[in-house]
Image 1 (tube, one colour):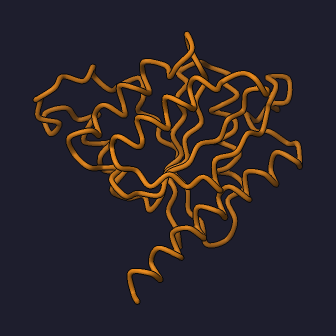
Image 2 (cartoon, helix red, strand yellow):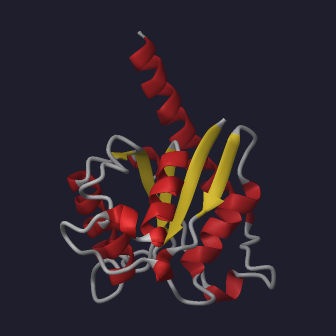
Image 3 (cartoon, rainbow, N blue to C red):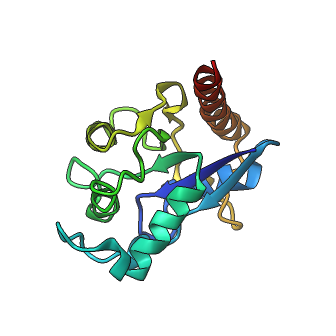
Length: 183
């Protein structure tokens, strides 16, 4: 069983990024357990040198990251980069090594030509914290708001197939790493 934490960088109701990850959660293949991180709005502003253990939302984030074998992030782009709330989440992981060597990927739901500033910044920050970026699982699967059903999920089969491929790529990467460690 591979446990994958799904983190949306959006705090907006009706977000295509959040719908994408809810869909990933709903259709995760056998052998994959997912959990949607829901504490983005509750995280306090990062303060360098602060003890993360004094903030229950940060403890919850760290618990979710410790639970996960891998992470899949989907984020919008604001002002040419990551939304501040997602950057704040990532800042809380800088001194704690919560993402260090953890297989991590992103799902971009923006149309081609959009969202590239966010993914570039995300790649840079994930590299800085030492995450194991799984490029085979970093995919662009554009989604329009109109494609989100009343249940909050995306029904398009091409989207669903792409999400399963991304999840499978994270699982395969983890298995290859585990096999290399065993040898």
